[in-house]
Length: 280
Figure 1 (cartoon, rainbow, N blue to C red):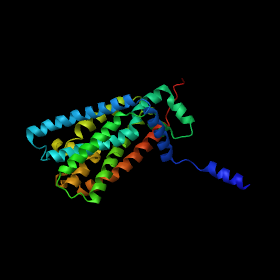
Figure 2 (cartoon, helix red, strand yellow):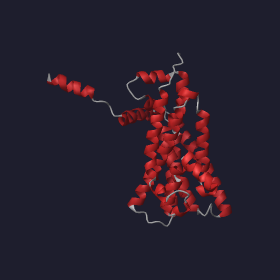
Figure 3 (cartoon, rainbow, N blue to C red):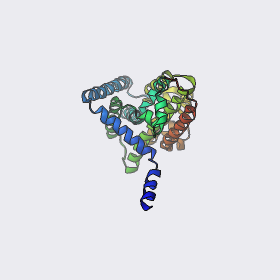
């Protein structure tokens, strides 16, 4: 009797979603380590790709000295924070890009039959080593830029920057995961997500003031790019006076990431109810 109760108690205890995610992602990562040469090449390729944009920004700063009044170190800090946040997103949630293929090929059927969240299975189906290049390069740029800034790096400020980087990644992830849900209703969203990714990459490395008041508002509330790096960067750098939004919004911007991720997951789950099997 006691053994039966103990056994039933063990079987009744569900595995937390975060643990399921960690187990599946770890298994995917271990499978990629088998092909170490490919892993290194993809890592270097991603770092080189991001480095080209950094070089372009360097050319602009070399020609004009500043961008919208931001110094070389300040722009580098903004770029490093944005790239680090992007790395957080792509490492942990980058496989949202496969949603259209999974729906089209009917792999979602298999996900529904397994004892794990279908969304978690989607996000851990593959690991792209190139995403490590984004994170490592972002952290390197962020560290070098931080050392050039005349700031008092208190434990609180360091914790704020770390929270901002993670939150920025969650904002991007929530946005893209929510859009992925549209694959179940309107067909492939790959082009939409690629367009958003290009906008985030091309505009995220610059102070929002260069886009004017209307542009800054659009990149804050229509496409929440400002929350990914710019708003917290203004707080760290003491540049909140240039904001077109209340300063408190910038100060609390690291809280936006978790809310965006939850919202994106809820949208995805709701839209996934409309899945129709292709019948393969």
